[in-house]
Amino acid sequence: MTRLGILLSGRGSNFLAIHAAIANGELLDCEIAIVLSNRAAAPGLAAARELGLETRAIDGKGLSPTDRDQLFIAALRQARVDLVCLAGYMRIISPAFIAAYPNRILNIHPSLLPAFPGLEAQRQALEAGVETAGCTVHFVDEQVDHGAIILQRAVPVLPNDTVETLSARILTEEHLAYPEAIRRILSSKQQK
Ligand code: GRF
Image 1 (cartoon, rainbow, N blue to C red):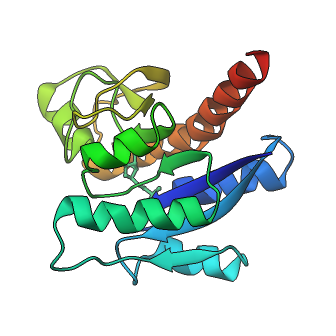
Image 2: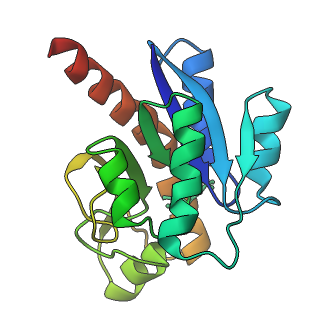
């Protein structure tokens, strides 16, 4: 049984999609061991608590990024986490964190990487005038929104799209993409 550690900063809809896929039996052989947040007030953390999951808020204010990440690493180790899923986690993780979980940290980003890394990816896509947008689940490396791509799902950009309508269309795909990416990783591990 692979133990997942979820890191989030906000709403937590991707976390909830992963949780639902496990609960529905669509994502097998894994469980959510802990949900961590840098923000105690994150709605996603409250949702995790309500679901009876182990949660922790680690603010780390005043600490360097490396020292702060040591607290996250310690919490993940204590929860015996095998695979870390960043799900709307709005902090850049330090090289020490990446080294602690080599090829075992995933992220989801609302663009078809390598296009539009960074903040407001959906706005960037609209401003660039592309016809196709989407989302990417990838392994985390030391560059932001970079690292080997596990899967992508595309959506059309429609003529009257706003940031809100495009984001909502992409988010629907994110909720399918993240569980599917985890499924692929777990099945490739089993074959090894
Ligand atoms: C998603 O769009 C995700 O791709 C990005 O941040 C957003 C998080 O949404 N990294 P949620 O908190 O999972 O609802």
